[in-house]
Image (cartoon, rainbow, N blue to C red):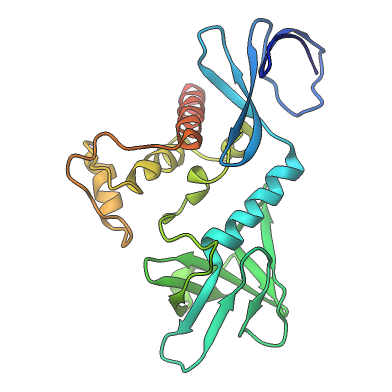
Length: 257
């Protein structure tokens, strides 16, 4: 728990803290500042040092979980799809975990890892993993342990996106452009993975990379389209904060090697 003094309408300075922490963090010291922000409609507290550098981000666990689930429903799945090679459709509904066209059962549940939903859901006693592609979705039926290359996917071609379905959030780590990231969320990734997450944000804008390995990696993605003179991209306030948090965690991971 922090002891703070008010600096302004949206800023507090830490003047002390108890030995324990009821919010599950181990950072934040005397002199650091907590600043209230709304990022992508999400209320957060940014933890900053005396130089105004971002150290971390605080968010209620329940609110974060609900936001992640809604993000997956609306920005990754929602839409009407044609099953390739078949004469029928599957529709993932916006705003709620419901799907039509996959049997009598309509409600599905996301599979959780590290208290966060992953790209997998269960419905009617079956488990499906999914990958978002430029044209739609790939559904893989089977266990989490099974290798995707050993499973023939169900190919879904997007016919109509629902109002909340996004057409520009592609990649393996779309959450970095849609939800505030916390140190607890990032701690499970390696420094190599954190670098990919951070640079995928730029790749979604068509950024051309100077690092050959990054350029080669994103050139293999069907959604990536490089744009000349893309060295300056119009990042959202959320993305700017997340990039700094990713850099912080990358540095921590490298120091621990």
